[in-house]
Length: 457
Image 1 (cartoon, one colour):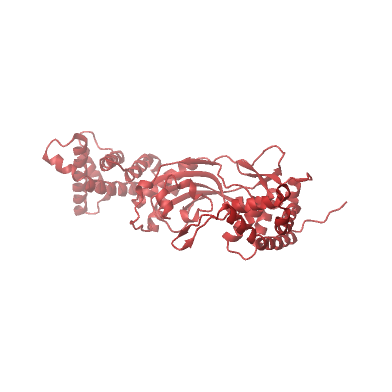
Image 2 (image 1 turned 135 degrees about the vertical axis):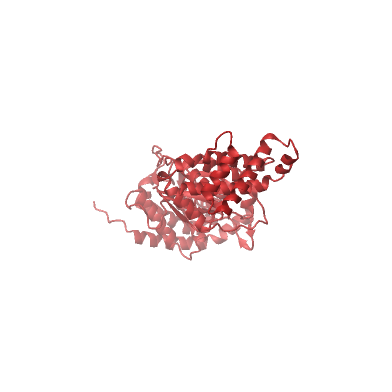
């Protein structure tokens, strides 16, 4: 017996019409549900409504209508069932879902696999996803959401090649840092990008950061949070609920943590701004894709970093990082295999760590870090450390006699402060020098930064 081929456009049109009807019919029912069970908590920030979509409430409503006979509410839910059942039937008619649901009467669940996880998903959850995305995208119809769902279903059955035109099958490995304010995405090469947090919210749940940056998240002050991300392609799996669980697997990318940390170190050195690693999420997919499939939003693996809440300042004005500084870091890192980078990498990391020192003895520690960097950069003789550093810095960075003399004086002052820290305030001079640690750390950092960059170039 022959069967007619599946008409995607016709299926999408039927689904759109049924969803439009359902969205209208369900309004008084969800209102009555809230009157009985309580309204969602309203969240308003700077006159902007940020109340989350009531996905759980809508799911409960759909399930109540589905099982109305059990509780003697058949007549009450009859209008809603009349609008809900056609949507369910149209979804079931999609060949990918039809194969997974099978012919079992009353079966409403399938396994939806997203990367390294799988969940039991019902039709109600898929319908809720359509409603949620329609509101989020501010569309007056479901045409876009229905087409997106069909694309993901066809991809799961390998009836549509990757990548999808809407990039719903695009995932990201993301390392989040705090430190610099970037406004636009920057291509870093080798498949990596520098991305502001505001462009990553489709992949990173705000709840994942609330323990590490509660004040930043609460006040929406995330300008200085940025991600270094690497894209990949994925596809979902859709299987009967009684089948063996074989969710799509993906190994963590090799050297991802090392690559992102090393670039972040170099970026800190080039910008002169501290950075702190917050968290890494490997295998993050778009929240919209999970909503369409009725699956929870998840990542394959995550690694927790350091809290940044102690750095929150509600009155601090953040300056956008100079693009030339970002480009310098990008250029130097791209050429790292052809320069002295392998030998200087420990100096870059220590210099970056010096920037992010905090605590009671942060300034002292920073000066000592800088001293280590300068000695590793120039390798002075043990008996003439200060003098050799003065000459080496002057020769590398000086452009004329006056600039070289100034550099020698600056290095001498820095090293005198370093000695006062190491040996303690044994006399009045060392006591005075210890009060000049802030100046010495600023001068020492600039000299170390310029020396590093010049040696790399």
